[in-house]
Image (cartoon, rainbow, N blue to C red; front, side, top):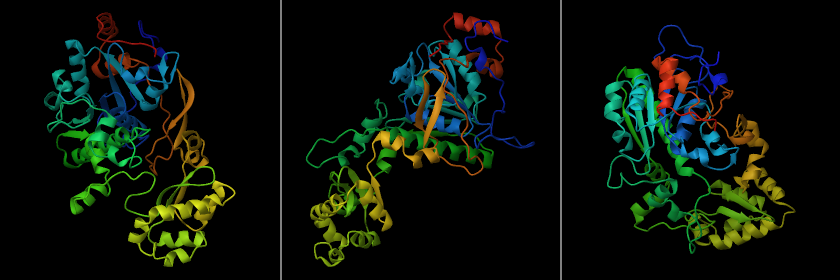
Length: 430
C-alpha cells in the first residue's frame, strides 16, 4: 500500500538481511560475501562512493546519507538525461538514499540512531567537517563501540597539510606522480581518468574488510581508519622513490619510453600505437620475432644497460619493423606468437566494445530507471562462490527515507511527514 507523501511506493521493500556480521546460530542464505554488513555512507564524488559501491556489489546494505537539499554533488555532473546523472548512477549502484538537512539537530539525532546499528561508517568530507557536524569518531565510537569508521581525504587526517581541500589531481601532483607523466621537455598532462580516487577507494575497502575481519576474529571493538589519496599515490611509485633514495638522482618523465628499462614503451605501428614490454628472456623472444638474431650480439644492445643507453636507436628499429606489417593486428599477432607481452593502445570506445572485456564483465551494461541503458565499468573483484553480479540500481534523492527510518528507527508516518514538512528530510525524483 502506498504511504501518504511517499513519492517512491514501488521501491519499498522490507529488510531481508539482519544487521551486523556476527554469523552465529542459523546460517544465512548469503547472496554475497558482505551480506549482513550495514554501511552508513557519508561520501560524494568518487573516492568514497567507489568504495561503497564495491561494498554494495559485495552484498552490504549501503545507506547513502545525502546532504539536503541537493544531495551528492555528482548528481549534476554529465552525462545528464532529464535531470538525472549517469555519472552519479555509475558510482552509486546498489545504495539506499536518505537525504537530510545536516544543519538540523533532528537530523543529527536520526543519524546517531542509524550509526548505532551500523557496522561501518565512511565519510570523505574535508578533515574536521564530520566532527563539526557532531558525528566524528569520538561520537561514533561512543554511540556504537563496534562500528568501524573510515575517513577518506586528499592529505589524511594528520600532518601539516591535513586541513587543505583536495581532489585526485591535487594528490597526484603532490605525490610526485604527475612529474613522471608525459614528454620530458613538455608540460605534464592530466591523466584522463581517476586513478587516485579509485585506487584510494580500493585501499579503503581493503582496510575496512581487514578491520571487519579483526573485529569478528577478536570480538573487540571497531577502529578508526585514515585513508588518503596522497598515501595511495606515493605507494604507487614502484621504482622511483628507491632509485632516488639510493642514487640521489631525481627520476624524470621520459615520454613514451620507460626511463630505466628497454625495450619497454609505446611504439608507433603502421596505423596506431602498440605497447611492448621485452625484458629478460622476452628480449630474446623479440629478437626472434623480428628475425634479427644479430641484435642480441650487437654491442649497442648486448646488455640491459646498453639497451637502455641506446633505447632511442632501438625504438627506431622496432618501429621500422612494426611499420612493415600490413596491419597493426598482424604485428601484434607476430609478437603474441613469440610470447612477447604486447597490447594495442585502445581508445575508450574500442576497449568498451572489446569481446574480452565484455565477456569477463569488465564492461557491464545496466539499465537505470532515469537515464536508461548504458555501459559502466563492472565489478573488478571475483569470487568463486558468487560468480554472478547482483542486480543493483542507483537511488533517487531521498528515495529510501521512509524505508530506512521506519524499519531501523521505527518512525511512523506522522513523524516522517513532520520531518518532511520541517525540511529535515528531502526527496526528489532525480
